[in-house]
Length: 316
Picture 1: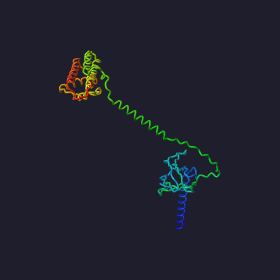
Picture 2: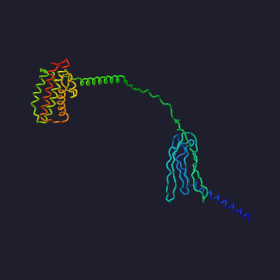
Picture 3: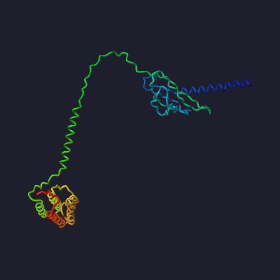
Picture 4: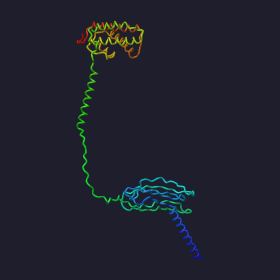
């Protein structure tokens, strides 16, 4: 009886071992390691394709951080492949290279499958393979060749180009300064050369201005523009200045050189601001307002002529 039990145990163990070997061999047969080349030049790339059946697969390979003598260039994501018999497999392509000359072995990578009927998982390794890394072969047929003649290289001297550029820049600066000071220079009005005195000229022009038709919008605007111009021309000739580009505020400040009362200055300011409103704000005053502005300007010119100016440099 004991001998019979021992025989049964041996038979069961043998069957289990054989079955395990068969399963292991079966997994190894299905796990494929495919390379496109095994002899490369330094830096040349190898395509490594790994395939394994989906049946019983529990854990796919995990690439190590580094592999001696090899560099992982790229690793695609694991992909599922379906065959004609509806069986499925998992596939991954890994691109590797090496920069160390010699013969090196790419290591096996573990793949985990489910065990039999509650047994521990089975780990199956991919096939390791050798890679021969070589230098580019030297050209043994390379012979001595004639020395080529020296090629003349033309050297361009930029010195005179810099000189010309500097001269042009200097001329440009001089031209800009000339334009700036020419624009800044205050030209004397053409009317300053009139044979009439500043007062007589102003009175003559005011008399002509009084003939304007103050019912026409265009003539009203021209009326007030000329009115302000007459006063600026008169005061500018009296003070020896060009006041045509001055604002109303500037003109009122210039009147400090004339002995006028605050009321006179206020009336002048009202008349000049009326002309500004017509010129810039498109304001159209009534006829009596325009005539009143002319009378105020005329009165201020008379008072200025009668007063003693503070500026001793007078024209005419």
